[in-house]
Image (cartoon, rainbow, N blue to C red; front, side, top):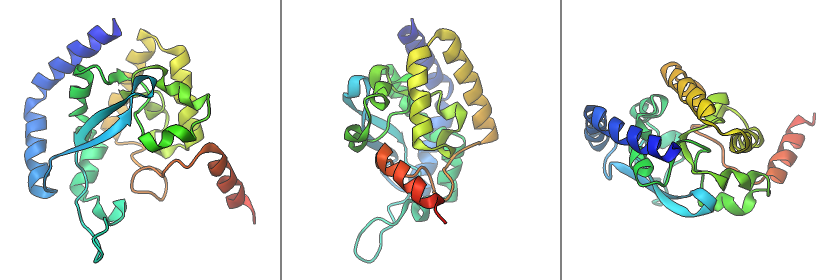
Length: 208
């Protein structure tokens, strides 16, 4: 039933929001350059890779040696607007249509994180990844990795139609308020380096 609802809603929104995603595509091409879409391999259900698509939110600005500048320097005001309104996520509706994603589920992260997960954290891949999820409505990028993974696994264990509806409603409120877009001191979200490394860094940071 969840898959049927995902497919119906994704197709409906693709039609209803046509002016929005077409307008966004034009502005991205003008203000940020091409390609308009950002494509990246992410782990899906059972960790199987798929190509997630979003609107790009950063420029390709590079230093004198040809290396990409840090995210904070490539993320423009327009890019921040796309992220804060979640307009950059609209192309993921195609991922939902193709069955690679759901509207609600743990957010798909980077392939390079797979070997860093504990067995418990890896349970987030027992369901399809989502455009939004339990962690996103409980702090999004403003919470730490351990808490994010705890919420992801909590969703896996408690998933239900009622919980999905609650998450979608809370997501709408988050988008309207533009809450928790990035982690403290970061342009987006800090990289995950493994639970043991994160715990050790937190411990060292608390020492006088």
